[in-house]
Length: 586
Image (cartoon, rainbow, N blue to C red):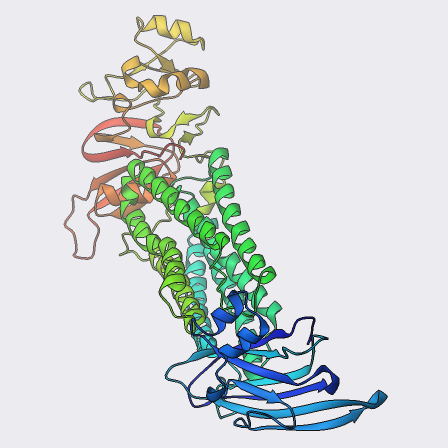
């Protein structure tokens, strides 16, 4: 240590009562004058007064109580011989006399306490030059993992090992679920994000564990390992945040992809969060003050990071509410997701406020680490439970197969459908009817759909043919729909896109007692239409018919049929049909 001042900070350490001690060695040239090591503890009138107030060297050393063995003279003739210290004079090159001192000191206090080590020589004219080593111990057993570790990080290694074990278990379970989902063609991008978040978390914990293993065994703190570990864990948090936002917007749950605007919003929020997290770590490293006990989140950047997280939660809730409104069949999943995710979003801010204003600084580091690991494990466990592919689960979100998302006829945003003629149709209003449909005159569809026999594909002749009752038409099968069948919000869109079809006064509601038949149907048994709708989201339309034959106790109550296009409509008592609604762009 070389300093132009007469007072310099050496080290700080949080000691445990009775079992703690420091072993020290100092060497310095005799002509620098007698050096004295001073010890201050974490009381307001001790180190905080010495470090933060503009005091003279003499005023600083007076605060250290000599009677409490807080001053250790590094000389062969000490004025205060209470502390066990052995000093000798040694001749070195250039006939310089050096003072070599070594000794140890134990610490006894009512609670774990931070101690700060400083060296001073208020009478020196050349400043301070000293070569030293401090062995700071918190246990009598060299084999103990607490041997070299400061008390504020006493249980960090144990916390990390427990977290590593739990996250590994979650990863194994998630891989098993992923295999099941892949076999059912339901292994979506969002679930891949979830698995990647767990993997990053495990690698981050492993890096931090290696840091604390070296710290425990050797007493050295490789700061780069701790920084790398926290950055990797940050990636895990960013991925989980992105996952929640895009699921809130319905990706792979109610839609095949996000709109450009939705993508830009998600990217902006996630990148802002990631940059603030990285900035917080770099700030804490660049502005690290070894003389103070400061946590990384105890900064303006830390508060900004938590603010972005809360704003992301608000947007996430808004997205979920809109999706629930348009997809009632997903209510169970989204309500559960909101309940689980809200705690994850808010836990960071709560932990930040608690650590900065409630927790003592000799337990803050390990408590914040424990809370962080528990919150992360909570988020991973909650999402794993929600995505368990169980037939009894009412919360399972995935009903769109991965092969359907890539299909050109599958809706490529949340309200488009691609029929055979290539034009876009609003899926919550789409219906394609064949020329020879047998429609019951009392049905709502019969009052709104008219078959046009003209071979002319121009819109005006179709409109004239039906005495102005035709508002839109399908140019391939030439079907006409009167104005009352189209909602006001969709009319201009229908006119521009060349048109398709509609049903039930444009409301996209369930079509009672209408039997729909379509190409390439997917047939499965369910107990009711609601379950059928939930399963058929990938297709857009479905019918459910109750079974007429006697049922066994284990049998489902009806037959569910999913399809994308309708080839035939007929009146059929006992059948419920549904054109499944979609949410607008969020």
